[in-house]
Length: 125
Image (cartoon, rainbow, N blue to C red):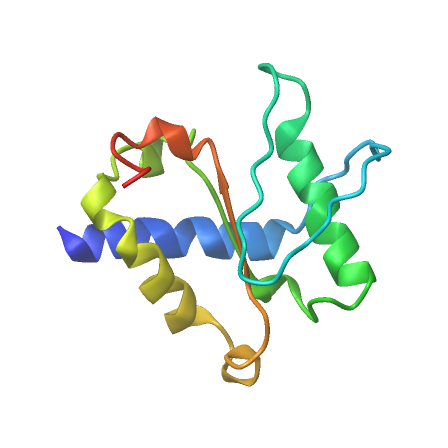
């Protein structure tokens, strides 16, 4: 079971790296980053929250806060393959992410983006 979960996570991460950041309409918003702190983006359904995360990732790359997209662990939990995850499996995400991260980026900053994380029952624990 763990192997299937790991494979699903790995597939989604590699898809994100291969596809890259999709086109988005730039929003006039500035996010204040605090090292080692979570940022939550809230808003109504279909209001552009996911595309705002793409803008943030793009800005991090353009402003050289991260060097490559591989420093981003981006998972969208509205994906059928990931909706099967249980809260106890969420720890697998970090392990899988670091297992595919190129070695030269292990000691650099990393960004974790979990879109629609509330779809995983018990995620908040």
